Image 1 (cartoon, rainbow, N blue to C red):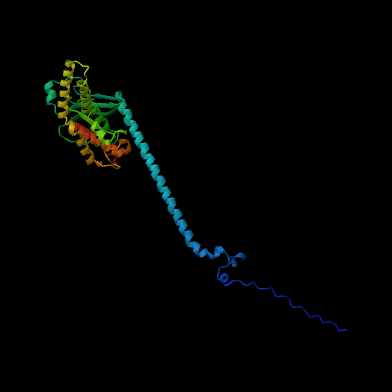
Image 2 (image 1 turned 60 degrees about the vertical axis):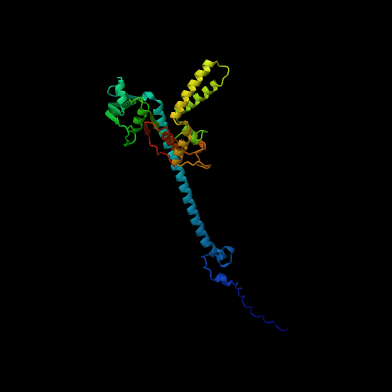
Length: 311
């Protein structure tokens, strides 16, 4: 028998896995076998890098924009709250007539008719004003000369607004023939147009127009006897004379001209003088208040911070 000679077997060599060339160029992560394999995330890593950076920048900008908007909202709320507090203080002072204690030289004395006719200025000596026990003026002299313009300058809370309110209320003596108008807030929002709000600010003119309407109806009332109709006709003619003196026919034209000078238009649009006052912001309603003052043309015009809230 032939003996089979067992040849020693050669140990098998482990098969080497072929790595794609693209993977050979990638940096190998320590201890990570997955780093040698191609993956979709690796293939797009070069493209995603700049995009991620861009997204981070966009996120930063968006955050900054949100922060800026939030800060603006907070500032606006703070301004509105401060305005409400200031207005509440004004209303409290306006409604509380007993809050003012006013004294001056010659208080309670009546002026002679000659003195009144010659008094073209407002002059008060030894004026003392206290508000709820707090002295704002003590032994002060006040003089407002005719055809002069004055500006009150001073820190808040030192009585500038109070002084003007006291003059407007005639708690400080003002000659009767001097009509006074104080502009301290915007006109109230209502359905009336800006033009109507200005024209109707002339209270005397509105009363004359109402009287004209009433008397005209009486003159046409056939149930009245001749004597009463004659009286109504006579009174109506007197009203016509007063209306002519007040230039009633040109009232709307004059009001329109003043509003136009303050930025209102006479044509349809956002800032038309024919729009209702409730459609305007506080600043534009303040312009309506200024227009009313210019339209009435008082002998003494007092303006308390008229540029506040103007757009």
